[in-house]
Image (cartoon, rainbow, N blue to C red; front, side, top):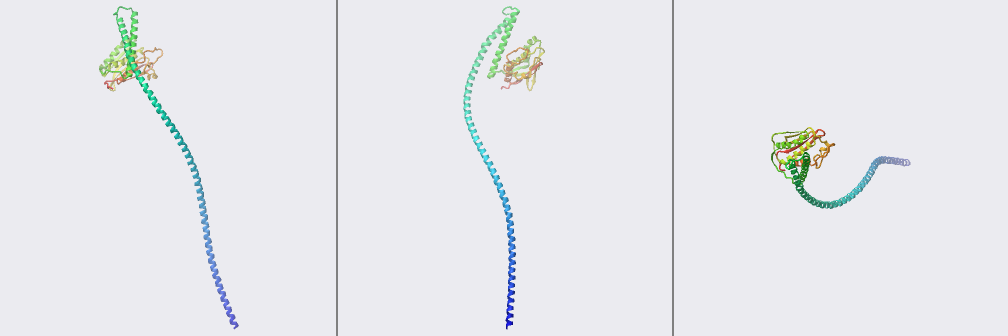
Length: 358
């Protein structure tokens, strides 16, 4: 009875031990499972920490980038502020200049109005002076030329012996008087012609004439003067050449050119050549005289301009070539000169064969 009870107890104890062992094994299995979970969780936490560290590094880089951007922004902001300050100054300066400009413009308008009034007044005075000048020239034309023509006429009569015989000295003195009177009359006529041309009142009489015959006539007029100085005067060109212009004014130009050539030539010759050129006529007067320096050619055709040559007296009024150029322009022609100092000069007078009527 007792052995049986003991055996049952032992059996229960063993059974309990086995159950306890199984329970402990289960607990250990659960512990291992929890340990595995904890290890997995730890790895996950480590991974999270690693990712956090990466993100933190990235955030630090981003933060540094933001700081750099802010610094650049501050720099740009400073530049913009400086630019705005400079622009404000420029705007203020521009407004100041615009105000000054407006003030000057208003003042300029006042000055223009004032000067316009002064010019109108001066123009009225000039018109009055021009009228008085025309009256003076008209008066001088009559008051000076009339007695001069009388002197020239009467000295001519005396020189012809119509008022009685005279000795050589008397004839010489009268010839000087007549020459001076002719010279003075020529000067007066030149001044009057220039005044008419500049006032636009010079009238021309256009008609056909033989230019060749006119050139020969002018040459014949100076043949005695050329012979007196021992000069040869020669004429070349066609036998006849009809032109339509003012023959009296053409003669006046040619007389001036040939007279100058003879005046400034002491030996050699004066050659007058007529030729066709570019559908018009050209008369060249060439001499072997003292010539003209190149620097003097530009002022040769100026009013009252005289080329001064050492060792020669001043002759003439300086109006001849000026008047000749004015007449050439009036007739639609041109006049020019070329010269070599010490060798001679050539003056070319071109004239259209048909007057344009301008």
